[in-house]
Image (cartoon, rainbow, N blue to C red; front, side, top):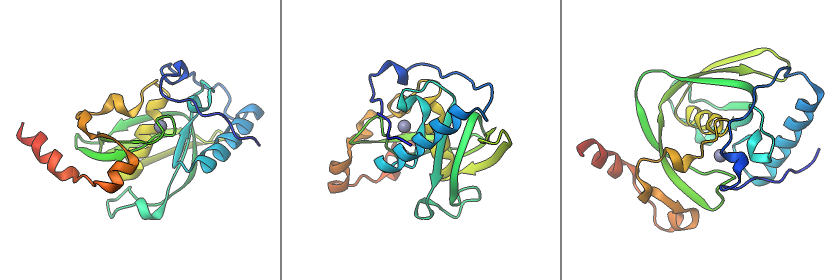
Length: 187
Ligand code: ZN
């Protein structure tokens, strides 16, 4: 296993569409995923996509820790999940604003509108299909990671760029997103 170098915003690998995998059980895929997991853990992320480690393939890994969950059905704790060739589709049209960070955009946080509920499908390392309905933070993580496979970083999804801030400033000066949601609804 090895720690991989993380591409930062501006690197063209983060703007490209990643390629589908033919065989998820190929030995190189297992090695790449092991290195992605080690790199994600070392960097303290909750998810990472292969393009972020300069590997232009449709692979994401993520987990959802208990403290990030809500009572919404589909927003429970999620084990470490490997998704190969994932497809995400919205369920319903409810969109919510929430904070995101990204290992490729270090030091910053942004409030990003995302579908509240999605259904996603992909393959695990064993080639078996994984299909889940997700909501809340779980749905947000999956949408964020899968965007990487289409060359999209979260700042491109933002509706209000005043909400792109430094993480340490946000800690010092918390922002109540409810105020911004109300303003958006009234506009
Ligand atoms: Zn990211």
